[in-house]
Image (cartoon, rainbow, N blue to C red; front, side, top):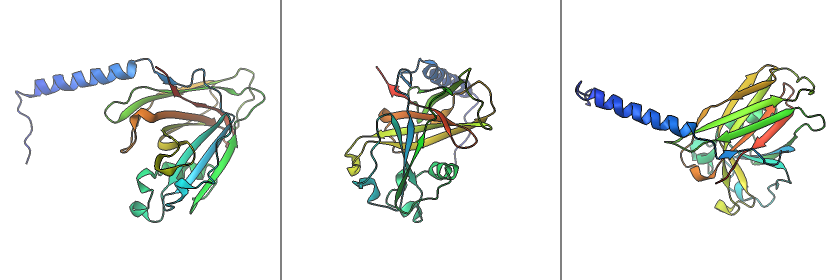
Amino acid sequence: MKHPPSPHHRPRLLVTLLLGLSAAAGVWAQPSVCASDGQPVPVALLERFISADCATCWQDSATPVALPRQMAIDWIVPGAQGEDAPLSAAATRDALTRLAATAHTAPTGSAHTVTPVLSGQPRGTLRVAHGLPLNGYVGASIRFQAARAAKPPTGPLTAWLLLAETIPVGTEGTPVPRHLARNLFMAEWGSAARWQASPVMGIPEGTDPTRLKMLGWVQDAEGQVLAAAASRCTP
């Protein structure tokens, strides 16, 4: 049985803890090197859903390829086999949340959807960013600024901020580059002209922290995407 630390050691432990928190705060305070600033604005979301039960779907040569300025998102959906499913290590219940939001059911194999980003009259600008990984976490941010002349949105808006891992072509046989969903932050707000959030997101085990990317979009109550953005890391 472990005993509590001696009172003589508590000051040292407190100092160590405070130093650790200060170091963490310093990392979060650093200017982000991974942001959507200056990046092409996505015109549509290409979301690819794969059942964790489908061993061959990841390598399927018929996998849809993202067109120019489409933001590709890859979701591994928990399968009926649970932890015994071939792709269970990458499965996330966030995929079920996303399927429910788009009124789709979980596939037994693979499926995809394409959701356009509303064009024409500007609805607003979206910025996403993230900092450096630290002890299994990463600081992120999402900020939306509505256009002054934009048509008022339908109902409350919902922000989606996705921590994704970029998977190069050929990794485990994938025929297309992927942005694999790893963690999700969602928030709902009213019709405010400006909104932002800065969550700290956990990096799931097995994720390569050098391949992190933030994908974000804002939807109205009817599911229409008003704005989307993707981060890019620069030196």
